[in-house]
Amino acid sequence: MYDYLIVGAGLFGAVFAERAKKAGKSVLVIEKRNHIAGNTYTEKCEGINVHKYGAHIFHTNNKQVWDYVQNFAVFNRYTNSPVANYKGELYSLPFNMYTFNKMWGVVTPEEAAERIEQDRRDAILGFMNDGALAEGTDGDRDSFDISTFTAQNLEQQAISLVGKDIYEKLIKGYTEKQWGRPCTELPSFIIKRLPVRLTFDNNYFNALFQGIPVGGYTRMVEKMLEGIEVRLGVDYLANKQEYDSLADTVIYTGPIDAYFDFSLGHLQYRSVRFETETLDKENFQGNAVVNYTDKETPWTRIIEHKWFEFGKDEEGNNIPKTIISREYSSEWKEGDEPYYPVNDEKNQTLYQRYKELADSCSQIVFGGRLGEYKYYDMDQVIAASLKCFSEVNK
Image (spheres, rainbow, N blue to C red):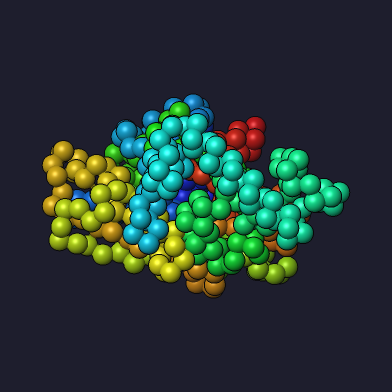
C-alpha cells in the first residue's frame, strides 16, 4: 500500500512525488505515455535537445520556485526574444522600439508613443461610427475619452491597446490561426494587455529568472523522480478501481472530464501538431522561435531547437546540423493531445460542474493543467504542486 499514487509524470506529478518522497512517504507514479516530463519532454537528437511538445522556456518571478528547480538542473542564460515574420517582413517581439522603427520609421520613444496613441484613437473613433461605443457620446468624437471604451471582442480589444497597424500585421493572423476563429468572434478577455515597450529591450518575458535547463527538461525531471517507482505506458482510467486500491491518496493530473467518463460532456481544448525535420545545415532561421503572423502561412511558428542552447552541445562544440519544428494549431479531437483550455463562458461553466464532482471525491486530488482545466506556465505548475503537497500532507 502506497501513501500516494500519482497519475501523470509531468511537472505537477513529478514535483509532488519528489516532495512526498523527501517527507518519507511511499510513492508510485504511473504515466500513460512512454516517457516522463509531460509536455516539457525533451529528446536528444543529433546532439540537440528537441522540445517534442513545443517550445518551453522557463521564466519566473517566484524565488521559491526558482530556488526549488536549482536542486535538479543548472539553467543556462537563454532569453526569449522571438521574431515575427509577416509575409517576409521581420519584426521584434515583444513590441518595442525595433518593431516601431521597422513599422513606421520612428526613431524616438516619444515619436513611437504618439503614433501608437493616434492609431488607437483613430481606431476607437472608427468603432464609434460602427455603433460600438456606449450610448451617450452624442457623436462628440474630439472630446470622447477613449479610456472609457469597452471592447466587444478580441479585435476591438487589441486595436484599442496598440492600434490597427500592429494588430493587422502582428496579432490578427497569428491569433486566428491559434484559436481557429475570427478575432471578431473571440472574447476580449483573451488579451488583457499587450506588452508595448518604448525601449530596445527584446526580452519577451518580464521575469527576474529565466533560462533552459542544461541537458534538457527530461534530465531535470529524472532527477526529481530519482528513487521513486515510475511505471510508464499505464492507462489509469482503464483500471481506475484497481489502481485506486494501491494508495491512500491519488493525485490525478489527467483531464478532469475524462476522469468522470465525460458524463457531463467534453471540455474543449486547442491542440497543436508538429512537423519536425533534421536539416544538413548549421543554421535555418538564426533564432529559436519565429512566429508567422500572416494568416496565409499555415503554421503559427517555427522552432529551431539548437538555439535554446546557443547552437552548442554540452562540451561547447558547434552542432553541424539543425532540427526545426513547424507548429500547427488545431481544434482538439479524440486522440489529440489537449494543450490549451478554451476558457470561454460555456467551458468554464462546464468545468465548474466537473469541479463539484471532483470536490466530492475524498481520495482523489485533481491538479495540473488538465486536472484543473487551467492554462499554467511551468513555474505556476510547480508552485501549485508545492502548495498542493503542503495542503494534502498536513
